[in-house]
Amino acid sequence: MAVTSPYRSSSDLITEALANLGVLAAGQAIDPEDFNWVNEKLDSIYRKLAGLEICYVPEPETHPGRVVFGSC
Image (cartoon, rainbow, N blue to C red; front, top):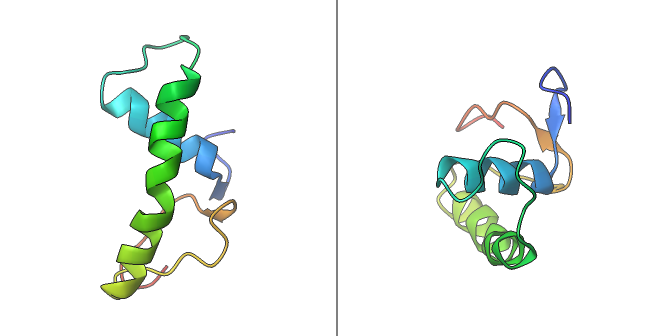
């Protein structure tokens, strides 16, 4: 997805998380096991953010690309 897009998908977040963890190098294909491991964690992360009243993500597949905590 283009960096200039105002929205990001869960796949975008997973790719960025794997890159930040050093699991994914630039231009490298994502290992399906790594993708699934991070993907399984997203729902609980979204619920925890909502439960702590930090941020509520109503549509996890299309959420703001830039999250401003407390007002997203």
